[in-house]
Length: 81
Image (tube, rainbow, N blue to C red; front, top):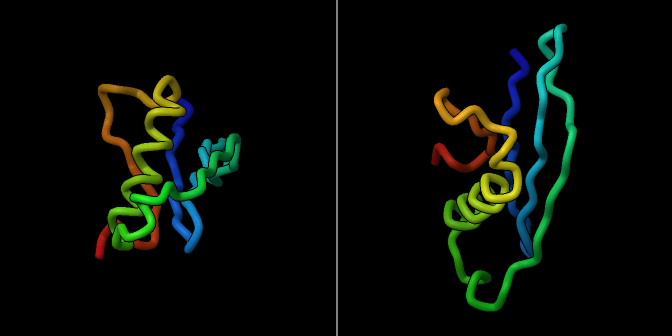
C-alpha cells in the first residue's frame, strides 16, 4: 500500500507543507507543495499555532490522499515541543 504523509513548516512570513509519498525503497518523495502567507491576525500566533495552521492547510488541501481509517504520521520540527 502506498503511504502518504505531510511535512509541515512555518517561517516568519507564512506556512508551507510538502506531501510525501513512500516508495518501494522506503524513501519518501515529494509529490505536491503548498504555501500561504500569514494573514494579519495570524502573525502573532506562537510557533506551535503556526505549525498547526500549516497542518490544517495541508489536511484540507490533500484530504483525499490520506487513508481515513489509519493513523496519520505528520513530520514537523515543532509539533512535539
